[in-house]
Length: 116
Length: 111
Image 1 (cartoon, chains in turn purple, red):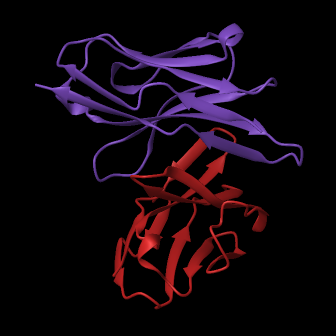
Image 2 (image 1 turned 90 degrees about the vertical axis):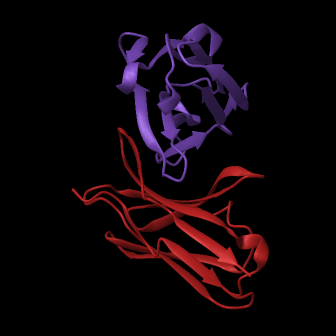
């Protein structure tokens, strides 16, 4: 079964600092990759996704992620964080299982706290 | 599109009572998922349906939990009897090939 690992569970940054959140997955086949964001008290929202093509994906609010197939990684980056980026970030992998059904597996999440 | 609609937004109930959470997926999405989120365990997949059929319910904690999807536009998650450890935020999500859309969640508190 596929799994998703997020290395940092809690990250604290000052405003304008650069961000990189690690995500690794374990699955040998074709995957679709996602980053979701959950702002305090809200539901999960899609930040960006990778299906195919350019491995550097740009999402909303200045976020980007790079798919490195050889490393099974899909790290999330932002050059300069803002206080409003304080949220929890989830990496997710979508595979088609043996029954032909789509199933998304989420990482445990990384809480980002940005200090003004 | 109104997105995935969950009700109620908040539910406070006494231990032993039956709780029913409701979800209306996005029209045209053929998969529906129920998740539970807690501080201790993070986001847990409880069950998912494809074309109204339950595909994987291995995440359902125990027999007190049951889920149904009688048609493509409605699903319920029932807990009977409820216990304090069931307190959590329960999210419903529906998906197309391009990813999930989550509902706003139901915050359940069992006292």
